[in-house]
Image (cartoon, rainbow, N blue to C red):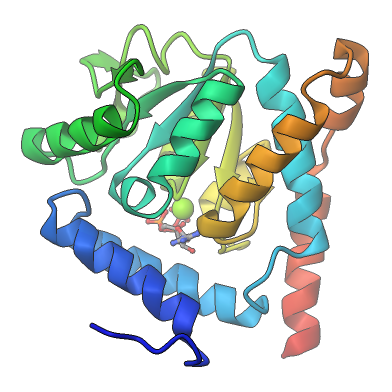
Length: 244
Ligand code: ATP
Ligand code: MG
C-alpha cells in the first residue's frame, strides 16, 4: 500500500500497515488488530498527541524503572510490531529485561517474536512464558511467566495489557506501569501508573525521559516516581468529557 505523506490520516494508516505486516510476519495475533481498533478510537478522541496527563505518567514511569531492582518490559505481538526498536533502546538504557507474554499464545508466535527481538539485539536475553503460575493466577495463558523474568521482577512495564494480568501482578506486589489508551479499562484502573497514550508516542517519550533523569540521585528519583493514578485517569477522562 502506498500512502501519500500528505494524507490527513497518514500516521494512523502507517501504524495499521505496521500491524498488518506484523500479522504477515507471524508476530501479531489476529485479535491484535481488533484490540488496536479500540485503542485507535480513543487516540482519535485524545487528539493523537501526548497530553499533559500522559507526560506526567511518563515521568513517574521513567523514575520507577530507574529505581527498580529488577525491571521487566513485557511485550506482546502488537508491541513487537509497533515499537520493537524502542523497546530494545529502553531495555539497554534502564537496563531492563524483555519478556514475551501472549494472550493468544502459540509456540510459533512466541518464537517469531523472540527471533525478531534477537535480530534487533543479539545480546539481549528475551524471557518467554514459563510454567511458573502467578498466584493467584488469571486463567489465560498470560498467567505463565518466566522464573528469571517477571516472577522475580519488582517493576513491570506492561504495554497493551489485559486487565486481569495487571490485577494479579499488583497482587504479587509488583509495581505495574501500563500503556493503555482506554482510561476506563481494568488495565488502566489496576496499574500503579497508566500512561494514557499511543505506545508509538509513549515509548519514544519514555526513552527521552529516562535519558534526561538517569543521572539524578535516588532521592530525586523517588520524588519523581510518586504518582496518584486515579487522579491522573480523572484528568484523561476530563479531557474526553470536554471534547464530547
Ligand atoms: P481490560 O478492561 O481487560 O483492560 P481492555 O479494553 O484494555 O480491557 P484489552 O484486551 O486489554 O482490553 O485491549 C487492549 C487495550 O490496549 C485496549 O484498551 C486499547 O485501548 C489499548 N491499545 C490498543 N492499541 C494501543 C496502542 N497502540 N497504544 C496504546 N494503547 C493501545
Ligand atoms: Mg486492558
